[in-house]
Image 1 (cartoon, rainbow, N blue to C red):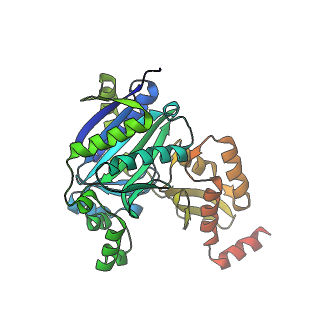
Image 2: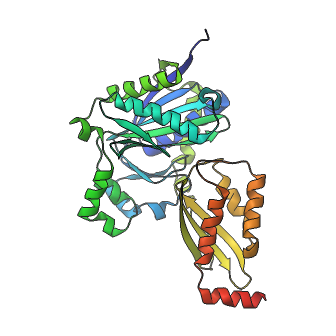
Image 3: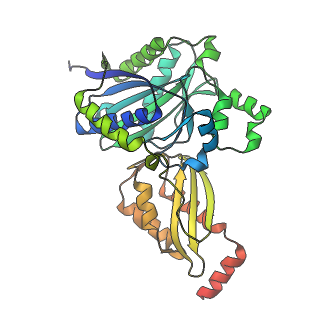
Length: 368
């Protein structure tokens, strides 16, 4: 009989957002390098707003409100949408490799991990169920959101469990239309999410929440749990280095709109993989795409794929957009969760279609 694999269990406590993001990078990259064992990490945040790796801060968050309220702003190393964190939530993260999970398919990985997490939440006395693509619900109300990232053969998959949550505070952090902040809209939002305090009458002790989740993961993946108190020496060195980069405005505000004097044609595209936003800077006289800008709440690996795609489309004739996108994806190895090259093409087409019809006709005549 083969020996069981071990799963280290770490509780890194209540921390600033920058520290938690630096720990994400540390544990993922150290796991890929062979310096970290398979790990289950529990974490908590001081009040903060986090944007996904591919998002733009000013587009997703009310920055002035966050600063006034003392809510920290940070960027995750994973994709996904903007979220609000405070001590009323607990995070859990798994650092594993593909062989551990027996599959390289991100959709299947999400299903297996989310079903195990839902089992852990059920052990607390609520009927939690996995809902594709990456949510866990109780009676149709969201209690946990999840997402993941790859680094080579290593996987970081993370989730958030709502223990005691203020929906209104979250809504005021996110950049959403004013009508969605009405009393009626806030009440409606409260009906779509739930938390353990509401379901159980009082929040369970954190230790009980952690043990329920840990035991569920151990059973689902047939591993032995090995609690540890701190990072190993190599992880501590890596963490100090990662924190220097992540605890900076350059990291947080990196996804800005492209600079330039030309107008930006913009569009939004909803697809199974998430919400995509695109901006296209167009030289209408020559019908050439000068630059594109893509953000959204989707998941992909490698994370820099967007930067490479945007660079490949600079100075692309509009008539050659489809050809160039297919050429890029034919040559580029990328893993995407419920996302396809056609989604990128569609959002850019929508942006181009938003041109003033008169200018489109003028450009066509000029080209002829």
